[in-house]
Image 1 (spheres, rainbow, N blue to C red):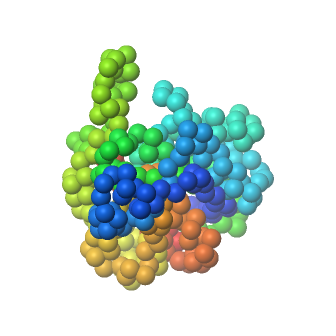
Image 2: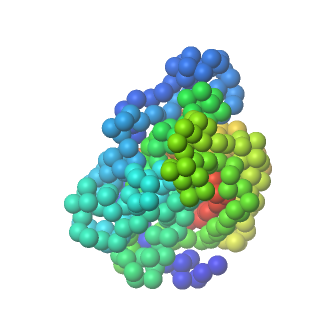
Image 3: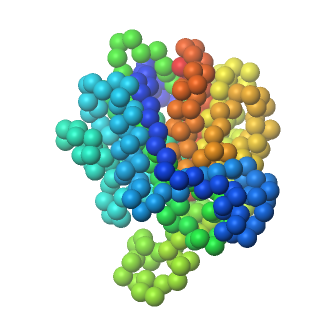
Length: 332
């Protein structure tokens, strides 16, 4: 574990969130899918999720969240913009430069990170590395995804889970910063790269070959059972590792924020970790699985509610498609 990163001091100078204008409730979704509302709750613990319209995109949500984050501390301008997304505005083109342009920022460094549901945690660690090495002094990290645009409308297994949304945060380093990383990890397992993916549209099945392609090739394919097992096993292992690396015990962790994938997964991690349920910050019931945006949406909720105070130890963990995972334990 890098001492340069664990000794580095930083702060979250601002946060902002954005959700589409329409919430898709279980009542409406149950009618569309021909299932009972109770079936949806039992499967995922989600009461509603947000579905973007044609005018609401990964870019528009990212810009709205970023504007709010920058309102907290508008100056100086960020000198780096990272966008964590696996649903970019356009194929073969990063979304981050377009976000910077919409925000009227100067021609700063800007690029995308595609790590799916681990995107926020990996984006956070990447931002800190740029700050710690002096390549940047202020980073705008934006996490924005619109997965509902890639779902087959009759697929009840994916539609009950996924929601669109964005969250942004300003990370900076100054002489009076107190927050720091106590431990961190990340990893990947490409053997599971087809557990959650869209078969067509990439280089494996390019658009030119999709004339007459059926809907299944252009919408999400998900192996839910394998993803559930991966999330619970790798997630519980990663939580234990972060605590052990930091030379702490489960009782030393004040708050936990994990990727909001499915309430059943979160509950399994609570049960396995031994960390009390009252210390887990969760918002999945109201917004669904928002992919890269899920962790910063929950973090922003905690900050808005004033639950974090100096000295609190906060464990953050993402896991998902790819397969990827990443996490850190920070002291506020």
